Amino acid sequence: MLGGRALVAAEANKALDLIGGKTITIGSVSGGERFVAGGRLLIVGTDRVDGAALDASQRWTWTAPTGTTSVTLVAATATIVLARTCAEGACVLNGIGAGGATAWTMPVPASTSGDPVRAPEGGLPAYGILPAGERTWLLVDPRSSRTVLRVADRVEAAPEGTVVLQADTTSGQCEMVTGPDVDSLSTALQPCTQWQPTQAWLPRLDAEEVLAWWRPWSPHLHVTYLTPAGDGPRLVTAEPVTLLSTDPDGVAVRQGDRVVRYLTERRPTDPSP
Image 1 (tube, one colour):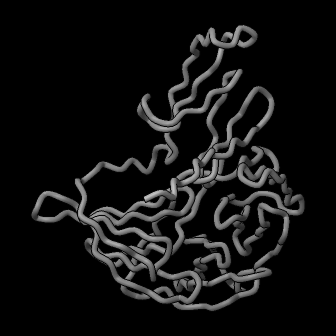
Image 2 (cartoon, helix red, strand yellow):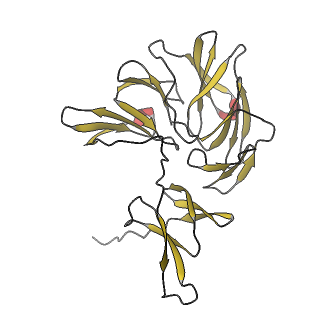
């Protein structure tokens, strides 16, 4: 599982999209580091990036500038992939747009140092996060190259791209900053939490077998809870399942030798006052 979105084969660049259900293959590429972000399977080599949309609508190759010694993916959105290339000690940020064309380039700001914040489980943040001094972070918009400085004690990214910046305050609460992009950040004071980004972002759910005698022809049902607690929403199936991914519209599970997606049932809103 990469990026909380796709199952990727261990020995081949073959990915199953757990939302759309399509399977794609990049058979012309061997080796490299693989990511799933921005709705794409991305493969990074020493001097190139190969990308394929999970809905099979697009396939491209981006070649780094001559003399590049390393390529690092920094962030990804549905329209732009942000990559850092380095050569002879100098590093550049590259916005890779539609068809693998270079949309923009910018020298990595001298105020930053170290590697960008990465998401676990083969995902990428929705925007670049570069360390820029004590408790200071430079956020980079992949679409426009615009940068924003933010102060935070902890910065983490989830596999599907969500970014959370957490700053301690004198009140004992934490200032939480998050948003889908650099231009839409929102701030809220909340109790401080110990986020564990190295663990799976999706809850590892407890599954248990229950007896349901109300169906004589199906006496055994399996309940998988969709929240860490055992009192929230749940998925009821006739056979055991393993949760693979969740999103606002549904869940994907491994059910026997199949991968199945169940859509969330939404009750209509009562229009009465």
